[in-house]
Amino acid sequence: MQTLTVVVITRNEEDNLAACLDSVPFADEVVVVDDGSTDATREIASRYTDKVLSRELDRFGRQKQFAIEQATRDWTLVLDADERVSEQLAKSIRSVLESGDPDVNGYMLRRRTWLFDKPVTCTGWYKYAHLRLFRRGSAQYVDRRVHEYPVLAPPVRRARLRGDLDHFTYASIDEYHAKLDRYSRLAAADWFDAGRRVSWLTAPWWHVVVPLAAFVREFVVQGGWRGGATGWRIASMSRQSASLTARYLRQLTAGDGSGTAG
Image (cartoon, rainbow, N blue to C red; front, side, top):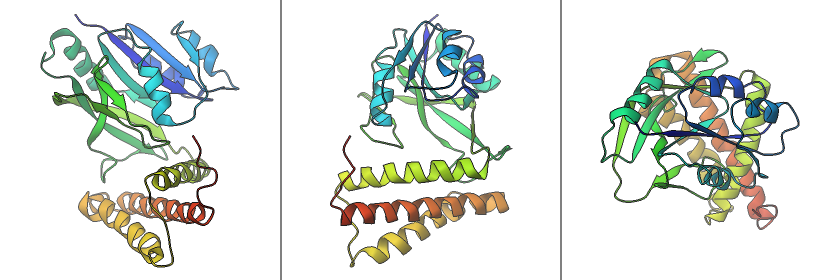
């Protein structure tokens, strides 16, 4: 039987953390890396583990890289505080620990996001796109401010796990707009670092084509139309995110990148 570390990064997650950690009672170790929470997050975390560490968040990629480096068990499972491991997914993870394929070093999970208390099973929001379970030391997070993800070291041998990772986000429209603004600013800074710029010549591309392409990708290519009004809403959210990111990228271009440090 192999062992498992569950890793979570937090900031003011008192409403989510207990339910997250309650969904993985089979973990042999829990690591929580907290970014200066001012609520009861740290107290809640301490009920589950004595490995509650403090680190100021500079980039999400760096924060999660630091967190997985604290893991000491055979496998590492990375969760966000607003996620829950479903019963079927828990069974799949335990199966890996008991008798998993020795040649596989990482597993892809399918995340089921709950939007305003309703599960989304259409668009790109519901697909096997999340590498969350991997052998300790076999993955490295990309150095990004937001939309971070781990990359497996070669030889890359991935498989899929049955069962959904439930993601409870955007409980209200106000929360959605707050996250949209924050993540769009961070994404724009990452784009700026990558050399992308908005000029008078490229403005139509960034402000018209890119948002429209985001909508089409979600609603048409990734099957949002199957979800009816829900699919339309998610596609519209993707368009709005792309449009806002482009606006912040234009501001960074005009200011020559002021405020992109970190």
